[in-house]
Length: 144
Image (cartoon, rainbow, N blue to C red; front, side, top):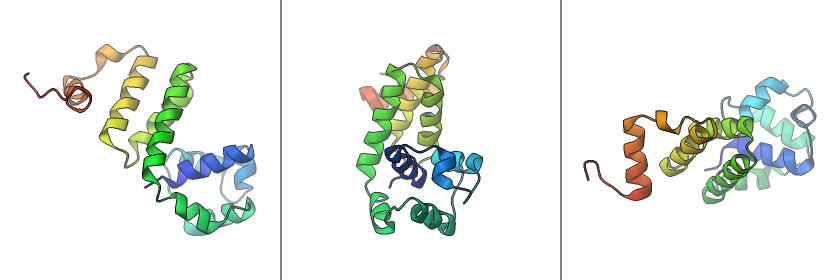
């Protein structure tokens, strides 16, 4: 299932709006920023007010919540684009979104690897994390 914040962010970017313009005093910009990153939840009342303010169909919005494969793929693409452009701030934002979501372990590990590489700290990943990377990506069991 897609994260509400991810869908809101995508809708906002499609419209070319800032966070402040998108929420138009319905909720604070700082609170909304955390909603986009999956750190804060949004009430139904505020969500529907934002949708109404931006002429976004409630039905269309809700249908996007059920498209999980696209959601993970979109996040992965955004993450890799940020990495390609060496946008560490965006990498960190996407990493937080992925970490706080119900995304697959593979995507969470990918985000961790990308973040660590972008900060030049890939060698500091724990033995446990390295083991999970081997299992998930290389299908190598512990001790082999």
